[in-house]
Image 1 (spheres, rainbow, N blue to C red):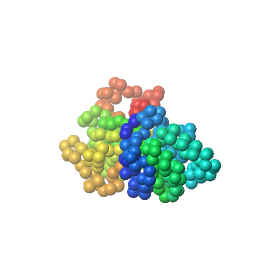
Image 2: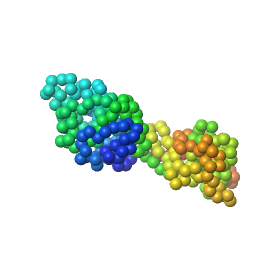
Image 3: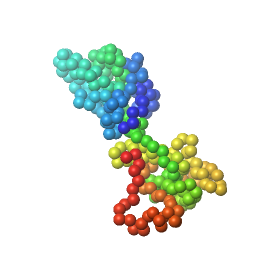
Image 4: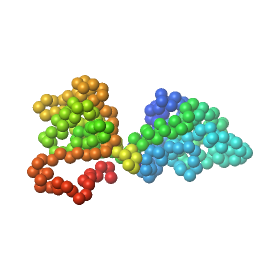
Length: 264
């Protein structure tokens, strides 16, 4: 995965409204970040957040009801040892979920080690789902492709080809028949897991389709909200070529499926 920067304060502000959490310890470590080696080794954002686990370091450790019970339901010596081991995991952030109250020893440890700890009344499962979705997209490998990305009968279809072949005109015709526009000209693609590539439109180009001889069209204003999509998963690439190129370089019935490498 790509090691884009996510610091503790960025993560906190991003989900302050969604997770309704509070920053309860480690306030001086607002710039604490994910370990770059761990990010590169992670297969997806799911590897960067999870319940408290001493085997997987360098990830957001979630402390729910069971995890807090494990930390405190032991002899004082064992409690101190279990809490002290969390420091060796070097988590970018600890999250106290399920409305749990942090033991004093845990609060003290976070202050000494300068590990940010957030507390929320939301369930630990919900917190993990929200953070995994965010981290998967944020750290995803990404690229930009030239073409028109459409939702055609629920299928994410990328229309590609050299300039002047009518990609945008084809897109406009498809939109007029009830299909949806995701992006025109520049399409941002993200690998959100091993088998899924998601495409969306750059913010500056949202809802816009440029047609030769007409100009820029605001598809949302012309056709309504249902004619645009915020994102789609890429399932098919339709590559337009000129007739002479088709006859010269492509077989009418190829022996093997035609494929294109996108983000490996």
